[in-house]
Length: 345
Picture 1 (spheres, rainbow, N blue to C red):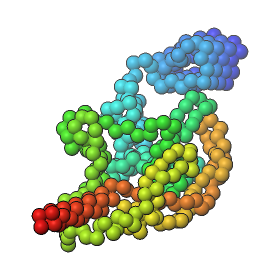
Picture 2: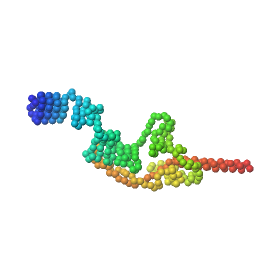
Picture 3: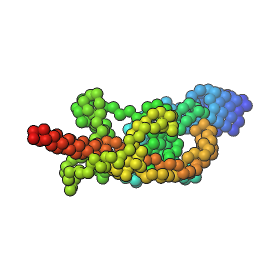
Picture 4: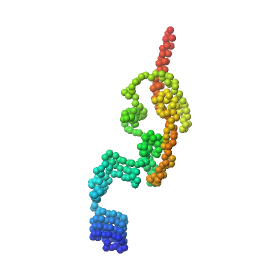
């Protein structure tokens, strides 16, 4: 420290260490020419032969070794920097960050309360993200993020939504216009877009029909059925159906078809749900208060009773319509035969 004038609380060990320091303070330099270029920079630590600062005026910097050093090793804690790669638990890191342990876990990040963790479990080959409430994904700019997706504490997946109307909805996709697009480039007819299974056995699918349409397919193979007999009494059953027309409550548009509970009495397999049924719906009473990406106050949730509407699969009316038509044709043909006989007598 030959040129030191007003600098104080500096420590220099080694020939020409901190040799050009003039007014800087609180520097520690150990090694030949360590910190040799520093003049006014303060609060620096420089260790090793020719371990120098990045500039003459830099402050608050730690330098280990000189520019020729490419590896940093702390064997006791298995921390290594090798050629620009950082290794924890490995002395030969092959990527920018290489973490390896002999146990089941590779790394874990835990918040101060221990209620949320992010970790990689090599034993089960799984990425584990644990949260007591929900896992949430946000997008946006700094200070203006919006939630786009969450997995809640019930295991339900919500995209562009924060609540679901029913605990039985496991995936909720919500959008202003189109919500889901499924695309493939296979030209073969029968290639499926969505496959529905029960206990890993296919029960239906939405499949490609040529290159211009789709087919909505449900199971109908004879090998899945027992006690197959012809339908009878179809005309009498058909007469019990009550085709109606109406205006929809939502927008006043015109509709034609059947009231679900009335059709259920005639063709129960075509209708789902129960007349006048209700269900418990979870909803957001007040939204979460956010400070940038941090949740300041969690959203307040509540429950309420709402209608559990019935639905109808009108394709399941086709067998009754077909059987009715066949019975009617039989009657017509029988009448035609009798008329012919009468005309010939």
